[in-house]
Length: 232
Image (cartoon, rainbow, N blue to C red; front, top):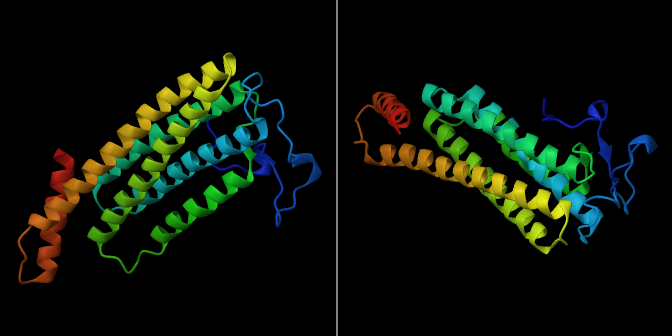
């Protein structure tokens, strides 16, 4: 089973920061992990820090999908979010396997990884305080948030491919190349899917005629968008 929340009790190791102190048994020094991606000719500590950030973003994507899945009133979107969550968990597993293959700990929390967690957590928190939003605004914001995350996944997989291209020939290069191909295809699929879902909901609302009674209009729009997403 993949890890979606990294904690000391789950096996985390942590690189300290200016305001972060770490118990000695969990600490990763600045020059470590020196043996990461051995034989690749790349800067091992930097590469390990970057992959820590990449997998952190993927894990936060799982948490985002769980949040919008739990709060959406749209059965069709709820089903789509459940599918996307499963696929994102698969991506987390792929990142974990790569990090292990390169000689690292998939529960290593680097400063870069903590920064990404902080950024992504703010997006998730915004949906927990969404009581002032009407249902359609919430649904659109959820799709926009997932699309933003998916585009970052595309960027992360593209960077991994670039690291692989610069690496010396050997097992590490082969692992990174193969993994980048898998992750990039999945991330592009998610970005395209989120774009299509967002387009469907937004265009449906834009084309719907304005009704005199706002309450009735809102209900009709919600039903119409739900039907469009179900068939889209």
